[in-house]
Amino acid sequence: MNKPAGLAVHPGPSTQDSVETRLLPHPRGGPWLAHRLDADTSGCLLIARRKTALIEAQKAFQERQVRKLYWAVVVGDLPQDSGEIDAPLLRQSDASGWRMVVDAKGDEGRTRWRVLGRGEGLCWVELELLTGRTHQARIHCAELGTPILGDPVYGAPAPDGSALPGLHLLARSLELSLPSDTLSAQAPPPEFMAETLRAMGCESAVQS
Image (cartoon, rainbow, N blue to C red; front, side, top):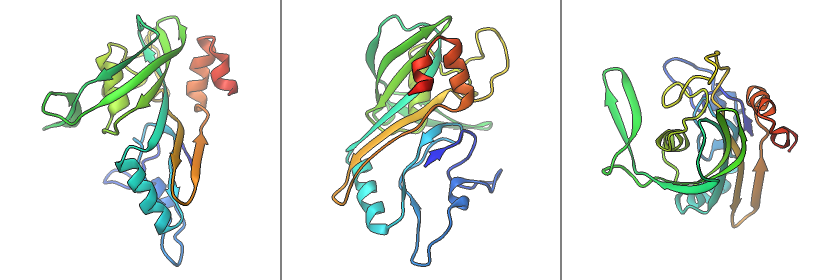
């Protein structure tokens, strides 16, 4: 499915509305979520209708046989057109809550990135998550010195100081080969992100 920004995958203490609660249960069980996305992230989310497909998909994710590409609009200017960041991530909690931090004691975190377009004070980038850590795309962009536009935790305000309608992060595509099937999906950017890309002169992002 193409998950909208702002919709949680699982219900929580603050909200009962979620992808999981919107799924219509089948008499024989399912459907099931094969992975998850942050509530603020839009885009490709894999849902299994059969238990065998769920097990196959979970195995593919665990064995890193899934290609996940994200689009992001980041604040700042990346000096290179492409690169890879290797920064281990650790969950850190305090009285105000939790967040992920870059820490040598954390789990391996690797992201390959490529600039797709540039605008005034912003970059449109493609991110390939080589590992699947919580908030990986968000914190790795921040670690590069170019946080994702609209990120309330690791991000930065708009360059002109205006209010932001949402996190500019899209799970753009998902590709995986299962014993039973080969799956490929692609999601368009949400309207608020498309608006930013148009303003940057990146019309190809909106049309594709």
